[in-house]
Length: 415
Ligand code: GLU
Image (tube, rainbow, N blue to C red; front, side, top):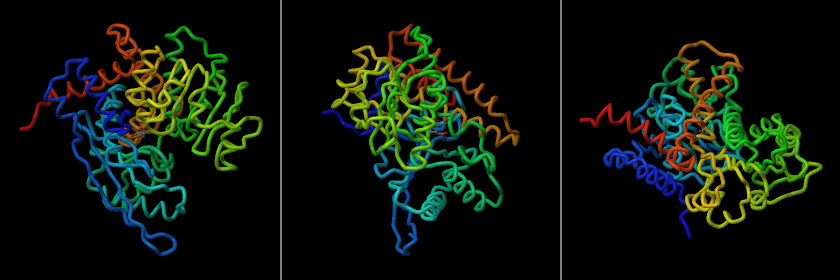
């Protein structure tokens, strides 16, 4: 049975790319380790008066091309290995879309769902204080990830700003527009996934109309992808969240599902759809499958059931290496996470640039530039697959690693 440890998977994909491209051995060894990893204790006073102590992390994988960049997640399965893997993926992701950042990730091992807003605020501010020496607009710029949002970024920005004595909007991205956030940031990851899928359709000679789509995970990314693809004419036949999924072959209206989730808390019980288990959603006979939840959902144990023709990885690390090999053997086209979901960090970059210049763009401007970058990355990576016979994941990883390696080469090893 294969290991489901995300760090093992991240190293396996990296080692494979290193071998394909003939990466310099020293640079390979350096990049197999994160540059620095911080583990912090996060004591939080609960509304009851009791204190809970959580473990938090912030990892910088590499900062050769610019400040470290990556999200912060609140999730009960978060471990140091998980955060290391996600930080490495951010390094390649930023390089694939060629934004001037290194890779970082952070998180707290906690399930925030049972917590009050005040408890989440106190936890966020304490975690922000603990990682304060690590972050900064030229050092490391956090952003939302699983179970974190614009409000949480606002609390981090405020905690940092109060401590340094002046307002520093550029210390986080994905914050509300009222304090220096960017138009278009909340749906940017989903929009980027849509651009990648449209590019894939074009190269496969497929039309958009009536293409069937299943989306696993109906959070910020999954719900945006579903809405945007629905607007393009695709048929969203199934979506799911932690509680399970809903299925209708004639197609769901994602806007109505979002309204239902707002009222009822989950997709379950949506009128006019049948319930479907997450495991069965992954096995639907669809044109496009978008895993947009957590790592390792497509693995050795269920890959034989997957029937989608195209998989666009909205989540980070949803496909394990063994499943990836099996899907490649069956000629399933996989648009890998480091490219498919890079729209979020691209618009984070736009947000940071706007903050540093104190000059803000319209949503049309943001979306136009995002589209340009996502289409360029797709064509570059797709071109490499044609030229070298590599998979999209191999080509995207090689492209990302080669940009980081080139930065390492010209900067040199100190001392
Ligand atoms: N959390 C997102 C990701 O995994 C966005 C990171 C960012 O914008 O810095 O790509």
